[in-house]
Length: 366
Ligand SMILES: Cc1cc2nc3c(=O)[nH]c(=O)nc-3n(C[C@H](O)[C@H](O)[C@H](O)COP(=O)(O)O)c2cc1C
Image (cartoon, rainbow, N blue to C red; front, side, top):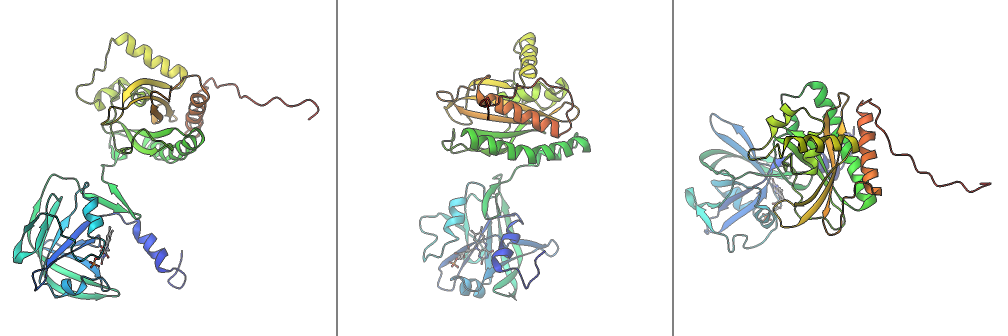
């Protein structure tokens, strides 16, 4: 624990950054009719009755005099695809509004379009707060869209997804196993991605089926967009198969997405799952990667908890013309061994036939 005598403002900023927020652009109009806007994540709700909100502004910022003298402002809660707007309003510039279409709200205050939500406010007090001024304001009008909000934390823009581990159907014991597995799994895929320079993903069995929670891109990843929170089909992906081989059919049926053909010939399906169990690996050739035409091969290894349920899948994906997802290659062996080690660390006891450990032959006399 650092006390005030030992932490500096950088330490404090880092700690405060762990408090994840949405992103707003606060806008106003000055007496000359000029628009002002700043990106702010200090916005917070204060009271429902009366309806009050607050935000705080650095006294040193260029637009401080304009906001300090304004009676009205608007809070534009940015949507997940509005990072450009966030960046634009986070830089001092004489005309941040150039080329942007706005709506005009109460008292001429500009309102940004396509936001998640907007609040039009009247200032009720300006409170000095160290190097910031805190504005407390009454909410006069609100509007909202279906657009998902942008998120900011630890100095980065983030996307908001429901917590897949919040599934009430999981027993506390399984939840704990999944959390431990996720932590260990993230480190394991990072090591594998680095060692083999392959793009790796970590998936959990979420409320809607196999869900990617983490990516480790290779130096040339299959795509610029590696979406966290992506829910994968069970039957047509390596990750889905890795889970399906170690989950009961009811769990799969419950989570399966509509429109999936779960039984491409029941016999085939069970054989495929038995094969995955035997090999400790699932392979899927020639999937198209998320929202692209790129053909990929994928290899996935299930991680099992103490009860033998799949809690995690470690998946490698690569462009089909380069990554063959060979089931017997060096990479496949390392992937399988990594998943098995994790399973053992999670308490999975059943003896699984392991690959013979290859050691370099010792030179005679060495
Ligand atoms: C995500 C994010 C959140 C920010 N939150 C605030 C804030 O709450 N208050 C503030 O004064 N500045 C905040 N800033 C910095 C301002 O947006 C930045 O200083 C802006 O350029 C000020 O504009 P101005 O100099 O034209 O007044 C934030 C920046 C980012 C990127």
